[in-house]
Length: 240
Image (cartoon, rainbow, N blue to C red; front, side):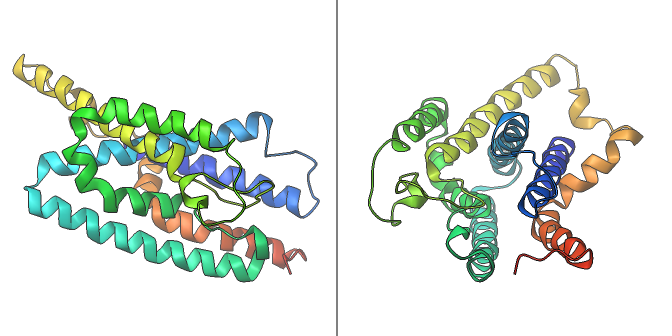
């Protein structure tokens, strides 16, 4: 899981680097479509699936009050960072600021996690319904920004980071379903004397950098863009 998370983070950093190159006129590659858009969406989907899988792991390793406190604390922490990002990007980017980005979404998912866990037997249906609902919501016209977090955005809405509840919370819920299935497979293997190798073996040397990135994904997410922009600023390019 750490390795997959690290690979997703590496893809995010590469995508944002290319976005910056395009923004400063140093590259003509349109990262909002084609292969780079696939990289961005696939990385986000992997990351959010792993959030759902992690919810299942947390609930299976700790008693009920403990994991619910953990989810609440982490959700509030992420929302604190998310609000800071909103404030900073509002000052730096104006109308393109991050109103509801991926940190807002993950913070929301963690705050809703106790409810999602109680409904875990419906996670396959609920996740599919949310993903489908997102495809419907994007075509519903609205006049203001108040429903942007739900996935209902006014025509022409532009932002540098947008992961609304519909459909993206559905990906987290799909990860919760996947985590339950993996848990059943692990139990079956253990019952038949076959330890699930991927859960107990140390990662090979070549995979350890990705594992390290995965374990520090929040710090990388918060710091990578300021560091990239600082590098461009040193080279004479600034967003102001």
